[in-house]
Image 1 (cartoon, rainbow, N blue to C red):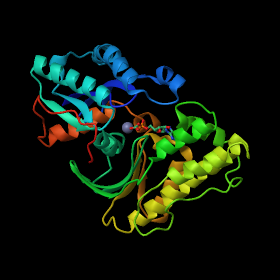
Image 2 (image 1 turned 90 degrees about the vertical axis):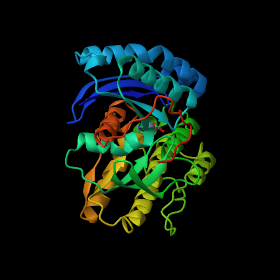
Image 3 (image 1 turned 90 degrees about the horizontal axis):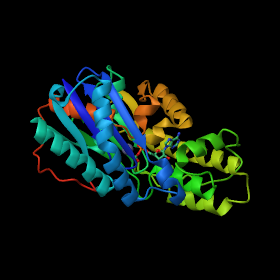
Length: 327
Ligand code: KG4
Ligand code: ZN
């Protein structure tokens, strides 16, 4: 089984060819950092136009890399939301057009499902159910992944996502965009105990997240400490919150075979190391996809498509693009 995956929900345009037995035959990705950097964040209209220009050549290149044509593909999986609606529409409409022209089934993939199932692409031994910490620029959730299409949301953020907090902190510290990797690099040179910062919701009964207060606290100390010390202390605070909340969720996620992390913030070494420790302390396996599979990509959309296709789940060509789409 060969699936063409298409991703365009934020500021990465990507196309991939993925097989049902976990081979990534091709993956092409074009980031738009340079286009958005002058604005310090993703500008939706610029993103949508960039997807229009980039997507078709990327699909053609991915097919050529894999020495395939559309006729060899079994189904086309495109992100149908959630995300910036202009970009989502570009990818979904392209997927629909290709599916119609080639007479192939369409699979409308929830971007969050792409992140949620991505660890099963890199780890063939990862079985359902698993506790997933999904930490990206737009989301911060704890999910019990019980099967394809069966996601029990245990917690979510009541304000900002973890990646958003990284991006805003980077902006406050003048570290540039995208913020997560920049904060991580600065944090490596700082003292994580130098700046007293809050741990919002730490110890609360529900396992939800909150990062807005942390960001405001960072804004108040800018100029009083070195950017490196602020970055290190901020990262330590985020890690503390993620670990505290995940520990709480572990108490109710009975039967979980593994602790899994996915999404852009899962690329952060401090986050991965702390979660690895938590999993070990609970006698659970720890699974984190390789870094390229954590940040947005089309292989995870192709893989989610493969899992859905194997379960007999396809979508009609009039399926709608959705800016909001909870799992
Ligand atoms: O999953 P993703 O690529 O896109 C969304 O679906 O949101 O996640 C992007 C987010 C951004 O906020 C980015 O700053 C953050 O992931 N990120 C990181 C790191 N790499 C990316 N945050 C912390 N440390 C990193 N190394
Ligand atoms: Zn994402």
